[in-house]
Length: 374
Image (cartoon, rainbow, N blue to C red; front, side, top):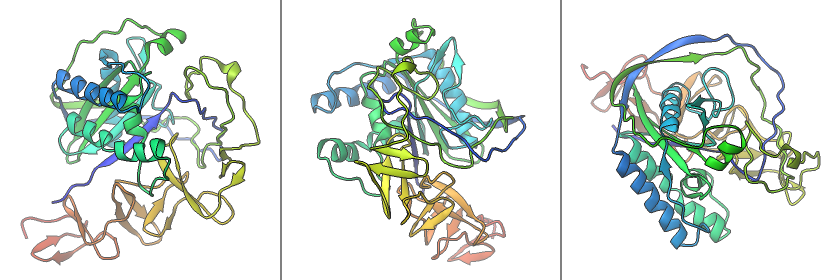
């Protein structure tokens, strides 16, 4: 069967500060869940060498202003172990315990400030290549100043090359019966120091490999947003800004007049509200569509693309549409699959999951799964 890959990127240390206001809250209750699967390790040296090759190349090509070799962090590896398992349950830059912030995990008095996620078929080194695959879009956008096409992303590549990330770790986990999730965590020792965390980071490699049953928390008695976070972008440049800890809160300037960025459900460019257009937001590493009123669409189809709750364009994932009472699969570029095998499932000409029928010489049962015994 054919395989597609999903990339998700989260930029937490930016000069654009994300301010959240939540509405329509619901309450869920935490419960422990055991996730069974296996960790898949690669050579630490191969991982670090490949990332530093990419970082050096970026410097030599003028994409960054300096070359800073990145180092391994044992604490980040422990964080990535957790996030790889959590992402196998909820593939998003949020946690299955209900927390919207993926950076709340602290190990050995160290926390992360950036995250990449990739869904692939083999493990860490393959995940790195998918992140690197965004280079062309990054050059197109930042060097040539050309607009990105719908589905193009740059955030994962930027995380790989940004000189202010000093340490990283990557872990791959495969939940039983599912694809491989690669989680990458990043941090910066100066930011850690400024926020009271340890800066003398161990570089030992745990390299867990093989079967594992991991306890995680799902649900969580917290307020969850049913609408997109309000965003403000008028802010002075600071050394580090992120939605968990801001080192210089006095420099964060919130405003209700947004020249470039989000204000409630609308997006502004040069002071003008964007209407009837797709926009790409690097803060969220996602595409959004603004309707004729200038508000983002959510929980609806826009052509071949599906906008999820909060307006995020679905990509590399399954979506259940209650209107059609069926499942659809969105490719990594966001377009829905049609006449396509996704693992053991077949999507028909209209994109809907096919059930209880023959596809050529293959039979899919009432759940839509190929039955090799038929």
